[in-house]
Length: 133
Ligand SMILES: [Zn+2]
Ligand SMILES: [Zn+2]
Image (cartoon, rainbow, N blue to C red):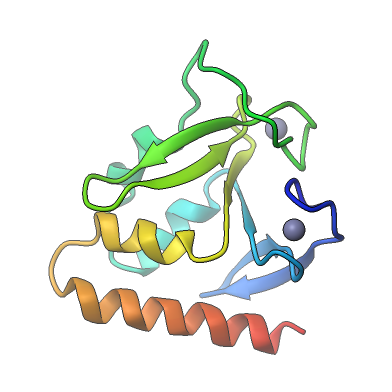
């Protein structure tokens, strides 16, 4: 179930990785390791995302609940360039990205031909979602 709007989520394939996506609010849940996989395909070194995705002991809990274990997720801010507000499970089950946040994360961490890649990646995501219906 979607942690934001409680709609049933569907599985979509994103660059060969299966993720849970909410068709109502367009948020996406990445199980542990899946976002790193997708990021790697997008040209981001997984090392760079690791600190972002690991839960901080003692960090405050948010209001959204992890779709896997039901615990309240921790809000986290990602990215030196444009801050993205993500939610992550305190047990490390995974991370939740609202609509558009994946492209922002990619823009934050990709080095090199940033604009082109971010655009490409954003378009891929949209077309994958349409095929998944
Ligand atoms: Zn939703
Ligand atoms: Zn969890």
